[in-house]
Image (cartoon, rainbow, N blue to C red; front, side, top):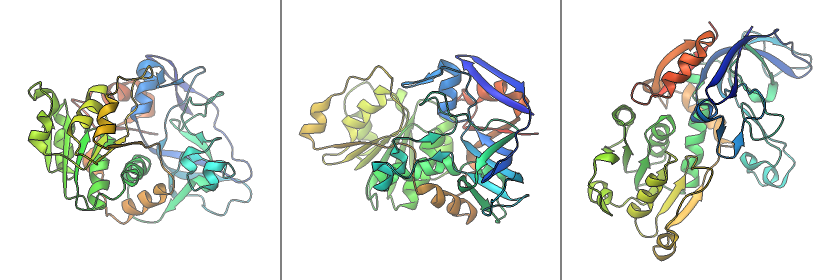
Length: 346
C-alpha cells in the first residue's frame, strides 16, 4: 500500500509499505478522503509548525474519513463496510485537564499526524491505517466521504466559537478566510451571530466566505494605511477571530474590536513571538483568549454534517489520489487557486 511521508521542508515522499493488520480493539480502515490542513502545509513547507519540529519522517493527515476493511477481536462499535468519521484526538482520560472536561488540553495527548511529541504520532495519509475503535464514528446517513472528512476542521471552528462565549446577536470579525475561517463563519452563524465580516489578502477565500454566509468581505491589503481603518468599513465587532496567524492581522483585531470585546486566537503565530500592543488589552478591557483543537465538538460536527445542517461542499476545491500527494500539497498551498484539497486512496 502507499503512504505519504514528510522528511523535512519541501521533502515529501510517497512510499510503498506492507498493509497493517488490526489487533484486539483495533480497526483497519481504508482511506476515504483526507483534507490537507494548514498544519500539514507548515510541515511540508517549513518542516515545522510553531514549536513542533519534524525530527523523524512524519505521516501527515488528521482530517479523515474511511471505510472499515477489517476489525480486530472484541470490536463492537463498527463492522466491516461501515463508513466512518475519524476523531484524530486520543486523550488519556486521566490527567487534570481530561478530568476537568478539557481533553483537548490533555497532558498526554496523542494527536494523529503531529510532531508535538517524539517519537511522532503518525497520521493517516496512507491507503490503509489502524485506528482504535473509540475514535471511529460510524455513519449511516447518505453523506459523502469528502464531506465527512470536514468533521475535524468543523470541530476546530465550533470549539473556537465556544471559546468566544455567546455570539448571539453580535457583530463578528474573522481575519483569514481559509478553510477554518470559512467554517468559523458557519459556526458563528449557527450560534446566532448577527453580522459577520471576513478579511483576507486573496480574493478566492473571500468569495468562498461569502458563499458560506459572511455578510461582508474585505481585502485587508487594500485599505488605507492608518489606524482604525477597518473599523470604519466593518464597524467595531464585539468578537474577533484571528485565524490567519499573521501578526499584522492580530494588530488589526486589537485596533478594531470594540471596548470590552473579545479576541480569539485561532491561527498559529510565528514561533519566535510577536510584538503585542498589550496596553490596548488593558485600557480597553479586551479579552484575548486562545483556542486549541476541540473536545466534545467532534461529535457535534459529525451530527451537523450528517443532518445536513451544515454544507461544506463549497469549500472543497480538488481531490488527488494519494500517489499524487506532492501535487495536492502544492495546490493546497496556493490560496489563489484552492480552499480545501483532499487526498483519496484511488
